[in-house]
Amino acid sequence: NENMDEWRTRPQVIDETVRVAKRFLEEHPDEARKYGQLKKSRSTDLNIIGYHILSRFLHWESSKIRHSLERLGMIKREELDEEISKSLPTDGSARTFVKKVKQYKLPKEKQKAVINRMIEEDSYGEKAVDEFVIMEKYKKPEEKKKLVDERIKQFDDVIAEARNLGDEFADKLIDVTRLTKELGIETFNNSTHGILLIMSFNRIEKYINEVKQLKSNKNEKTEHITENFKGLGN
Image 1: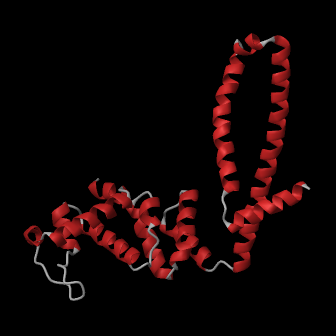
Image 2: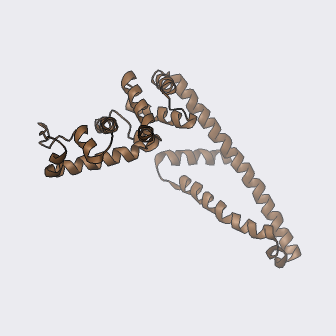
Image 3: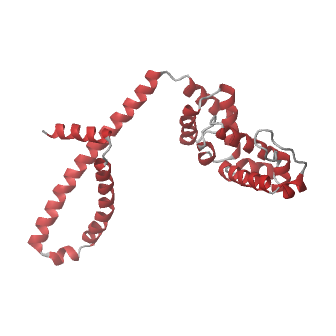
């Protein structure tokens, strides 16, 4: 039904529409008066465009407008991570998240981790979000350090595996070059796998260049890491 469709609408679409509509009506008071009585804000001297006027203007349910204005206000006051609108898939999931942020007073710097957890586990219900928020808010520093250490270990394992595969790939290319010289270039050109190998080079080269670019960054942290890698090779 219509209410369920609204509940499923992406919050990014809702919030951007409400933001633009609100600004338009603030700048065009004659248009805004068609949808309700206007009052001036004491702090900004702008016309106050509330959810009743926006609801009539956009022909949307007032609750949808009200929740969107709440999100936009919290983001403006830096109480809410703006990723909520960009990342969460539905208006319903955004409402649940905001409800729990307010309930537990979850700091902005901890909110992205909860949003990521919701997406990773595809869990947006109130019970699940309640658990994620509590775990993140009361997570002990040593637990965070343990998670970071585990990610670093995982990162090192991936690098080691990539290096081993690179060495194996280099050995195979040596064999390809040797056999091509023995059998002739036409043999290589007539090989379907030879053609596919050349195509693979383009994809591999792209990612090799990306990794090289990471290494070539001139910030202090990267230079320090580079020196460590040089030391390992001595």
